[in-house]
Length: 239
Image 1 (tube, rainbow, N blue to C red):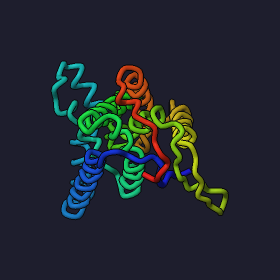
Image 2 (tube, helix red, strand yellow):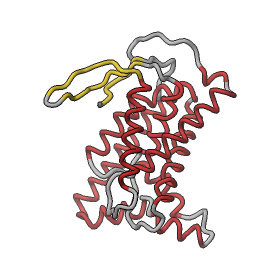
Image 3 (cartoon, rainbow, N blue to C red):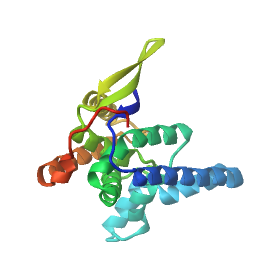
Image 4 (cartoon, rainbow, N blue to C red):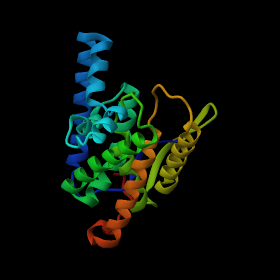
């Protein structure tokens, strides 16, 4: 099930969502430039420097270096991607779901929420394997937080999704609670089955799980204490 668009209009232009997407593409272009000029070794050094390396982060924190470059990678890693599929998949989800969450949180609030969600998502992955020397990169943890907030705030929003049925596919409108719930269950299954496995890389599913949960919790709290987060009744025009 691949979401393509939602029927959930916004009241303001999503400048922050658009800016985050542009920033990710700019950084990816820089990665491609490094690959073209310096080869794999240059790109790997760049990713190791700016991605979250759990072993390095935990070592820095054990030494009391909380305001360190290793800590900063919890943010910088959110703008790095491992390839076109990784980048485009993340940006599709951010484009579909980010604008509505930004609309409710406000631009400054959404940016803070997005980055914080990404940081907590990164720490979730570090907590699972604190001795790993494999860099964790990608916007998916922050985007997972955005999905968690959308799941809580817009559960009945219709999401046009591409559903594969064997060799056939069909476009259907599905409530967000099903689309995002299905996505989260897949992350849980992947996370549970990966426990105890020897990993050399791959998908940081616990960053997805941690990001989604913190996004849902923050959204639930805001719905309870901040009237603006509850918004107003929406029409069903395509957003």
